[in-house]
Every structure is written in structure tokens, then in C-alpha cells.
Image 1 (cartoon, helix red, strand yellow):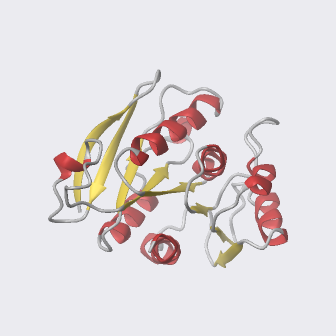
Image 2 (tube, one colour; image 1 turned 180 degrees about the horizontal axis):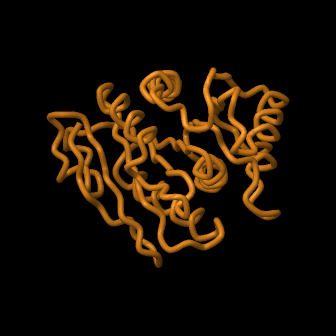
Length: 214
């Protein structure tokens, strides 16, 4: 894949890496689309884990998913959150990232890991993402930032993958609600970080995303 550094517009300082398939003009991908230009039709916005625990766009799980997607002609926008804001500013960062991608691509989905899973759910609902994929997602950040409750408003394909030995993220309420609503869920024999299994996890979620985006 080829990466292009970008700045996501908004009141907060949000920097990102827009990954595109090898051979695609990354400079053109970083600008609003012109339908006469050859570029990927779809993009996934990838939300990193908790920024206060070194969560950033270079997280192994985000990079592995981006490599899977770009190998299949789908772009991926990985970004860093702005200054810590208890989840509220971070949700806005993700919203802005989806808007940024929509200016450049016909179809935009969203992915999030851990803290980023809650953020991806909330932003995906707000910005009408075309597909949502979550890895070991937090179920709730605050009373107002309740990702499990937000599932009731999801009207697009959604998949949750979680580790059976994960005792860090409070994923159970979200997974339970996803099952009740008929969304796709999958358990994986791993702890919260999926160490050494990033490629396998990326394959499972990546296959879901690619199939839904066509």
C-alpha cells in the first residue's frame, strides 16, 4: 500500500494516513474526488484505541486491516485523535474523518478497536457509514456516549469480533445487544490485544468489509 499524510478538517488538530492500493495516485486520493480520475471507490475509516494509553493510527491491528483492504483495492484512512476530550472530541474527530472520506470516495465504512470501537459505532451512526466493523469494542464511554445503546440506530451491516479471554474491554453489553438485534458477531480465542494474531483478525473483519462494500 501507499500512504499519504493528511490533515482532517475541523476545529481540532487531527492528522491521518490515507492508505491507498499500490499503483494508485496517493496525491489524488488526498484531494476531493473527480469522477474522471481513477481511484478506489471505497474507503474504511479506522479509529484507534484509547489515546491516553498510546492508542494511535499506527496500532498493529489498524495497520494489518489497512494492508488487507488496500490489497483488495479499498482505501483506508487511519487517524490520530486530537487532544483528549473524554470521548466527545474523539467522536467528533471520527465524524470529521468520515466526512473527509466521503468527499473522496463513493462508499465509506468505519472500523474501530477497543475505545475506537465505541467511537466507530457512535460516529458511524451519526454519519451514516455504509458498513461498521468492531474489534473488542468498549460498550460505553460515558452515560451519553453509549455504544451498545447506539446499536439500536444502526441500519447497515455490522460485525463485532471479540476475544474470549478479553478481560480489559467491557465488550459484553455491546456484543449481547448486537446478537439481540441480529448483527454478525464472532468470538476469537484471544485476549484483548490479539497479539500475534493481527493478520488473522484483519482477514476476518476485512473479508466482511470487502464483501459489504463490493
